[in-house]
Image (cartoon, rainbow, N blue to C red; front, side):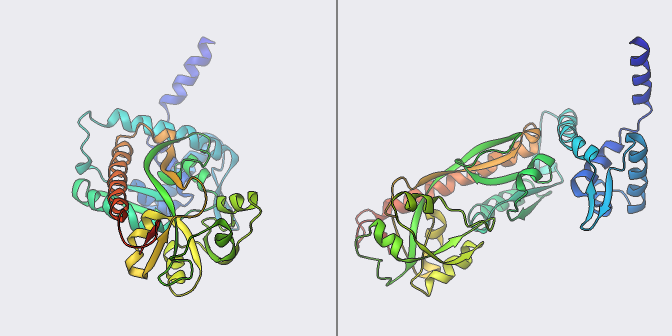
Amino acid sequence: MFRMMIMHETHLKSVDLNLLTALHALLRHRHVTRAATEVGLSQPAMSRALMRLRHLFGDEILVRGPGGLSLTPRAESLLSPLNQLMADIRILLVKDDFNPATVRRTVTVVGTDSHAVTLIPPVLARLRREAPGVDLVFKGFTPDVARKVQRGEVDMVFSVANQPLPVGAASQHLRRDCLALVMRRGHPLSQSPLTLADYGRVEHVLVSILDDGASEVDALLAAAGIERRIALTTPHFMGALAAISGTDLVMTLSRSVAERYRQTFDLVLRDPPFGDRAYDQTLVWSATRGADPLMDWIRQLMREEAEALEAEDLRARASEVGAPGAPGVRS
């Protein structure tokens, strides 16, 4: 046993620990040139680092396939512990007086275009003022987003509280929002009392983020024996709002988003004719990023800006009280 411990210690001392940074970049990017750019190496230097890593682990690490480079099973098993290790190392190196103004990093966030037009603008304005060296990459959802969170390819994902968390993920409440039924001004349902049967008869626009057509609203309607027609399915909220502005189609979406574009598209907002319309927006990230001071700071920044948007929405709803028109109508 003692001899084995000495051999292991000697082997560790012979390892260039700088290779861990290269390995982390290679595992996340699966691309030699992009990994080299991230860690500040030339492409040939990163290729040499990959050769050394292959020798160290006795594994190819990256193999070429039809769609480019992919990870070997051994490399896949390294990614999660390496994410945690790099986060721990970062904590060791960061001083207690963390200053976001001195950080140079790229942060990747996944969300929809509704997040891009509501929360991202004030967050980006704060970053430019308080952390000008932090660049933001905003990406759309893909079916493998949970795996990307686990691998550390994505720093944060916008979600809602009723969505199950991926394995090894953590979440934070951002704000409270509610659903609104949106239609063009002058729509036949814009002023009359609205029933669930009316909701089922009118033609709808559905925003399908992952192209799966899934909707909790349809499950609710099915329970009531009602089926609606989806005349347009799109992954884009802004495109959906533009579509309903010139047709008799309607759409159910975040009231916060709808309110901001009510005047742009000349829309009417109504309360949908079903039960609880409120929901909680959340932010999800890998637990391995939980102790990263920059990520912690940005998550707090996002929560502050989300709460500011929520307060703004509450003021807008309060202004509807006593406004002319039928109850539940924002014209």
